[in-house]
Image (cartoon, rainbow, N blue to C red; front, side, top):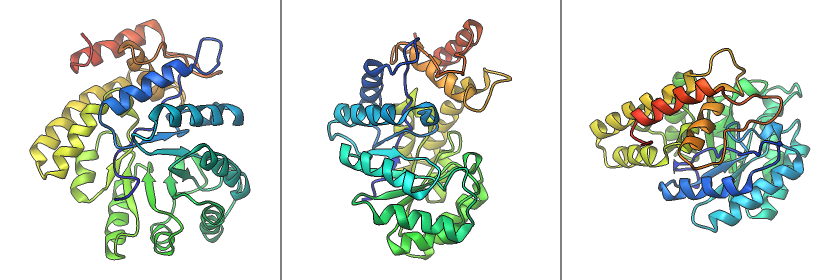
Length: 305
């Protein structure tokens, strides 16, 4: 059974008003997710606002989530940085803290070609004793990860899976098909909140949706319906989830790091899962009016009474 399978939420990172980590809320969020039936946790991803954390804060989050999860589900740790040596430094610390796997992007800022990016993954994997998951998120990196490169790295045993957050559904399907033709060396999961039913139908192994922080049980029901081939039930659950996803469109005119994540945090705060929707500086939290609009959608979705 692959480590990247089923519903694996990218865990939000809660903050106090002074900008420090809110570890009590992080504990509460982890319990909320595991209680919802998720199959794993992904910390220090885009939804976890890893770019705004110091190295010490990264380690604190990893250590706390692993301790709270207490072996109930695997914990995968994001390691984004500029080059393989720096990524490997993060990854080794995560491994030492008990991570089940690390999630690795292409190099950031560095201008590498496709061959160098492939070697980037090889260098990281060679220095670890835990699986490497490739994170295809071109909006935050130099380029989209190539299908053939990913499948080849899977054949070599360099990477165990791919978390696809490219938003390119055609490329995702081609990756699933190519992986299957190669004997399925990779576990392939989508980060696309509103298309999980379709991705499961075409052969995705799992999903890594930020909205699962708000409604983990809904995504688990969706995955279970897909597993038993009940596509009507899967579509109905996806349609309900998509109505909930409207919270991501409430904030307008904000940065890519502010809108959707801010809405997810506001919704979790409304549910009492975390203490507040505080964002890391310089990002502002949602306004009172935006929070009210988010809460109305959450209530309409049946999650808030």
